[in-house]
Length: 453
Ligand SMILES: Cc1cc2nc3c(=O)[nH]c(=O)nc-3n(C[C@H](O)[C@H](O)[C@H](O)COP(=O)(O)OP(=O)(O)OC[C@H]3O[C@@H](n4cnc5c(N)ncnc54)[C@H](O)[C@@H]3O)c2cc1C
View (cartoon, rainbow, N blue to C red):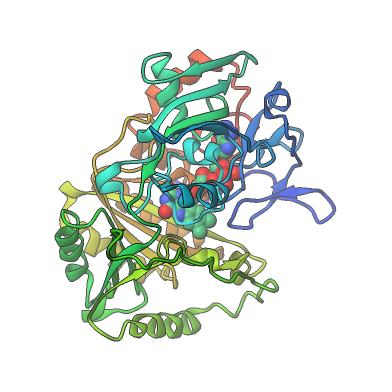
């Protein structure tokens, strides 16, 4: 019998300092923000980056835990323009990296849908992007990591040296060690512009066939689904595919940075409701007037459309929100994706933000999220129903042989996590080896990995 709510960390009272992830559900705790990450991580429980993980993976298990934030440790240690190999401190943000590297003809080999993340966070979550079907996760491109272990020793690891530490740290959510420096291979780009195709898609079946059609032709693909539309148009949306434009296709001038505005205040909880969300979705769907269009665009709106509005997470109100992201294996077939979308709508979990992606083969990171199949991500406001919705979706995902993405998760129960993660014993064996006393932990590791609070 399942409890009403999964075991959650302590809830903050109004006068205690708190920390939260991108979903704005706070827990009691404080962070230190040093510029000497190596010194500060001595005796630390967890390192976090820019807090863009939605759930509780970057949050303290206990308010007394020493939480270090890496963002001021952002020096570039070396860069070789002839090979594209770069080495930097873990707090270097993607926004700074691409500002420096695009004019030099390079870009991150893999990028998530926001540029406000650190290299350490990209390693710990083994982030994936629109090119997963071609390039795999970020960890695929990492050549070496400098890591502080729980016993305070510092180890350099790679595919050749301490490979089990290397592959456990990639996607290991900060639970094997504090990443101090990251060395990786940048992608050489033919121009600073993207050539993209958008196609309006009428339902979920057409979406899946579009993903199949574009994958062999386009290095980057993803789709936005109007998951509030039902009946014959269930799963309609806009499919986007892109590649770096050639010198000939691209404008001669570099792209200008998009103007940035900040979401001015936290919206009242009632503003985002099924009616306003449906209206938003319909408007967004019909924004794509032609069924198919091709054009060049700047990398910013292509990779990071949500970054145009800073602090957009306030739109969900003071209740906060979560993102449910799962991957359904290809072997489960199109039927599983269709049924998942149907279940999501039936449970009332649909919202304006629902993204579908094609994932390539599983990577080597021991707990890395993607596996060959279809990934679906949906933002959901925290409501009294959220635990029930996540439970039902998880039961479906487990039956289909899929899994959820830890960096987005806040509500999965331990028993569901264990059922969906056959690689867990291997990861726990690595924790036994590198951190037998479980000094490194997070609110999420208490909830899912059975750590003590
Ligand atoms: C709008 C938006 C879009 C996103 N799109 C995608 C996407 O397309 N693909 C994708 O894969 N992800 C995506 N994400 C998730 C995001 O990429 C990850 O959560 C990423 O880890 C956040 O980086 P961060 O620096 O903010 O890390 P944090 O959120 O601060 O931490 C995340 C995890 O990394 C660990 N960590 C951070 N730094 C270190 C370190 N130095 N050493 C050890 N552990 C560390 C933390 O302990 C925690 O477990 C998105 C997030 C947002 C908000």
